[in-house]
Length: 490
Ligand SMILES: Cc1cc2nc3c(=O)[nH]c(=O)nc-3n(C[C@H](O)[C@H](O)[C@H](O)COP(=O)(O)OP(=O)(O)OC[C@H]3O[C@@H](n4cnc5c(N)ncnc54)[C@H](O)[C@@H]3O)c2cc1C
Picture 1 (cartoon, rainbow, N blue to C red):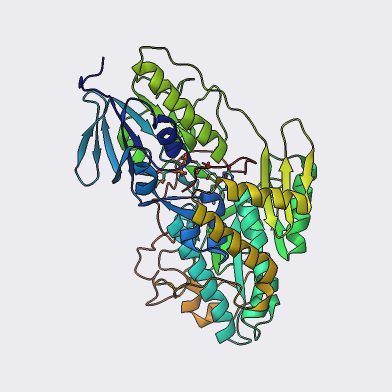
Picture 2 (cartoon, helix red, strand yellow):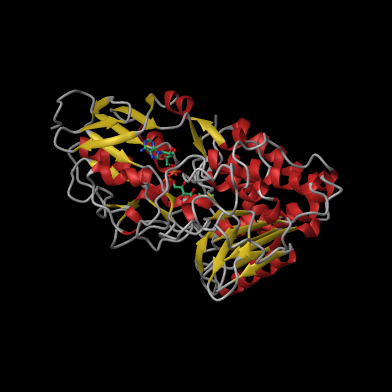
């Protein structure tokens, strides 16, 4: 019996990512009323955000309107952000004050950056978790190129990527290709050697979940693209203009991108649900939130401590489908069953014609074949025919013609300038160790009077998500599954 005794039961799903949309899809024919709530009007395809950030794709290529997806599946869509959950009354409250009753609730809100409490990381690094993050990153990147062109012979442009997981590797690889191909074509007056890309990883290798052979391949491929790969390197702090590493002088960095770890957003703590490592919501084997009967969690945010799923698109999809099946079973008076993840393998791309694929108990593939497999799978799992066509065209253009000028999608000048653009002293330095120590690390940044960071508020460069600095977690950056997100067509 449901508390509200209405028929059909009301299922509320919070989060229109891989997991949330998968629940909607599987419930489309069930005898339930479904409401899907997301703070955004679109569902973002995270695996291709780095292409938006590096000017290869338009933001719209990787976003799909949630309202359209929902209405075609007899689901009501509400734009809103979950604020609190009232377990006793079976209701949720949104940040705008709206209250909704539920019979079943699914929490599928994904993750955000985990800065592990590292000083300066939340303030001075760029994130890559949302569409807004990707746009902010792209605009600063393009502005950095433009600055190189404008400040002829005067400065270099150093980008540091923190984290050698799949996200860090694909971003660093593409940045390396940008500096060697696109920069020359788009800004012919800039010597490409003035752009410097480095990838810093604390572990002894890149792509740690992959076999050693593939890890070595990835490193070699990155280095072949001019990326400086620093392994076994611990970052002590991030400053406006540099990254401070253990046992060495600070490394000058105009832009530092954080791809080193994920954690639940701060807001989850206010929902009254049990949280585990990285702030993830603790669930039982059937994906019901521990201590509850009618609340489920799925995707990156859910953690079964006895059998944790990787934080990838494929587990999110499978968990979403499992949650829908459990709800249908409970409504019919049945029992729940444990979730079991069907591992289809992992893949990560490094750049043009370079990727690694590892199948479970199967062969490994590298190079062009792996890259084509990566490309095809991403296109298949991208939601919407139009997005697939535009992504295919834009990626084809990028990889076939990007050395011929016009190869990057540009945006607007960022509203917030790079810290190093505000101070000629910083701009003129050499690649590494040139950051002025004076003032660095303080909220005011390194000598940037009047600049955006000089107010003392030091806004995070992440465009869309709240930070989770200090949230205890050792979860690593997501690596890449061979099988990806929802394959619904528009
Ligand atoms: C840059 C990047 C690259 C990646 N590449 C790959 C890859 O190649 N392969 C792979 O398998 N995985 C990849 N991943 C991981 C994969 O994207 C995630 O595992 C997957 O998105 C998890 O799905 P989810 O549904 O749990 O969460 P998400 O897809 O993150 O969706 C969560 C949704 O919840 C919404 N939301 C959050 N909080 C609230 C709230 N309080 N109220 C309302 N709505 C809210 C958000 O707006 C979002 O739409 C990548 C991740 C990133 C960040």
